Amino acid sequence: MFKRKIIVTSIGIIVLLSLAVVIQKMLSRSHKESKVAAVVENVRYVHAVPVVYKDLNSPILSQGRVLSKNIVLLCAEASGKLMTGNIPLKKGASFSTHQKLYQIYDKEERLSLKASKSEFLTIVAKMLPDIKVDFPDIYPTFYTFFQDIKLNEDLPDLPNLDLEQTNKLKTFLSTRSFLNNYFRIKQNELRLKRFSSYAPFNGTFISVAVEVGAYVNPGQTIAKMVDNSRLEIEVPLEARYLKWIHNGKEVQIFNEQNETIGLGRITRIAPFVDEGTQSVSVFVSIDRRENPNLFYGQYVKVSYNHFKVENVMRLPRSSVFNHDHVYIVQDSLLVKRNVTIVKNEEKMVLISGLPEGTMVVNEPLVDARENSLVRIINEAKQ
Image: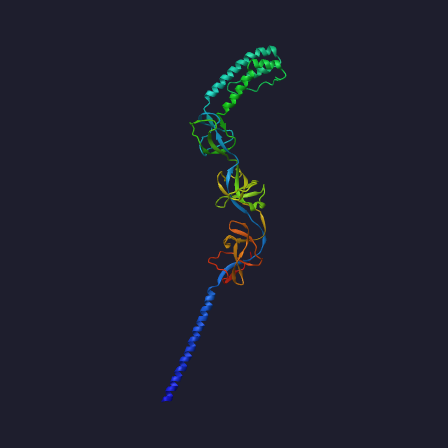
């Protein structure tokens, strides 16, 4: 009986020990599997491409504002009541060359000028009989001059007389106050012209400072106007890009929706750097007749095309962080490296500084950590 108990007990102990060994092995296997699963879960999949350097054509994009080559302040040259010309004196009104822009009330001046011409006619009429007797050779010239004088027109040019060689004639004309009256009237004719102004080009009023009917004084600003036919774009450009920019080069012009709206040509480059922006102003000339979709004051984008950049690689701008860092894949680990940004484009950058063949990540990585385990899911060449 005693032996039987011992045997049963021994068998129970053996069973328990075997069961413990089996459970331990199962737990160990489960722990290893969970470790492997954890390692697999920590592997990050990234897009990367090998570094290959080429000579690439890269446009230079910059923004600027359309300006006019002629921006003129229209000022009064006489005093009096302001009156309208051939076009409304209003902001936005357009005009053509030689159209009257404004008129200042000048009736009194015109009447005064006519009175002076009438007096001058009397002087010349009284001179003619004496000239016919004393200077018969020049009488026909003076008689024609007398006939050409019109009250509503400018005085004709003086007869072609050699006064320096003919002292007698010079004395005769001086004693009759002929020259004095002639030049005084010519002066008044010029003064009368200041009461009106005519357009020097095809343009538009962009602002008007004085309303029609107001009293103006000499030098007072009436309006600001621009030449619509001669436009240009001032484009600030980083000084480091100047080696690719030259006078005479054609450029493309885009609106804010990146639609091509015109063509232009570089006409001048400022020989100095702006202190505030550290940029250089490049001026692009445009022909309004060939580019009807461009307007004064409009902001546009300018693309300088066909500029070759040597020995670079193009990457998305989003793959570069901290201004000049990228991630590369080295021995299945994520490693941070410095690069040289040769040129910025709108959505891409041209880089150098990495050995060719290096696998560089070409996508933005969120919460990436250096030396973390990664796996490349594409190896397509650039």
